Image 1 (cartoon, one colour):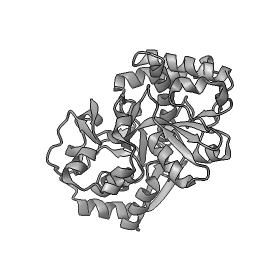
Image 2 (cartoon, rainbow, N blue to C red):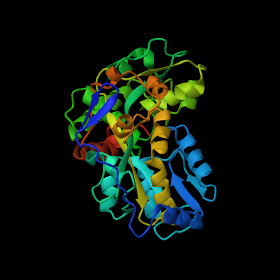
Image 3 (spheres, rainbow, N blue to C red):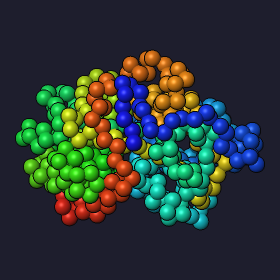
Image 4 (tube, helix red, strand yellow):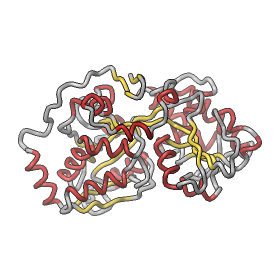
Length: 368
């Protein structure tokens, strides 16, 4: 279980001294050589404005110019990533993803379906035990909380909590940053609304969230569009339910045109951990492993922090004193996160099933 203490995330699992987890049969030099020989890494669902991924990818390219990064469908959701692995099991071409970045609940389910390849990065011991598969099939990478990204030009009185979204002044204004039938971000957005309504963790909050969005849709406040900073700026989705790191990154990108508010709601503060994994059918398995080494190095973790995501090795980085103060100063105040709830895997599985299978029937809004 996670809990916040000031700006530093405290975890029940104590980080141990970092030891190498690379196979004894393959040194780092051998891994780099093998990855360069493959010459390509295929990623999926990594928009450059998400969590600082643009700079993280650029850093990998600069470090390993011999490896071409083939980026598939940047705007895909977690469900789409899993389907891409399934659809390309026998395909060694450019449409087969080597690696995925998905919501926490998708890691165990993908492992159970035999879709993932185990690999433990060299910084494995500094990843909290509560945020990784013990056998190395998936591992947490970063987390954030759901927030409201608001176009201040069009919404002079921004919402402070989920219930506010039902106000008449927000007609044709509220959107999710994904399709709740496939996107982990959108699914947890529905779940957060359900918790705010008083739904118990798990399926009950998922059901309550569906009822909330049914009412939001019936009032004409819900916009069935996958919202982005661009649609927010254009006025199509003036209020966007999105991860805090996406909202803060979007605020910076828009640079005051329009001015943006980023609000962590008073209730229903849901934190989401995303996880990395390597496809069991990866055409470039060594490049995939090297990519993971890059992401879980201090450099990679700080790259995510620069994109407003709390990296999973945050405690270890803080303990070593390698986090620049200016990065911490750009993050929201710690008080905004004090009520954050980290759904368990069981809770996520139950609410994901409730939301994805009942969205059409209960809400009836075709988000696209």
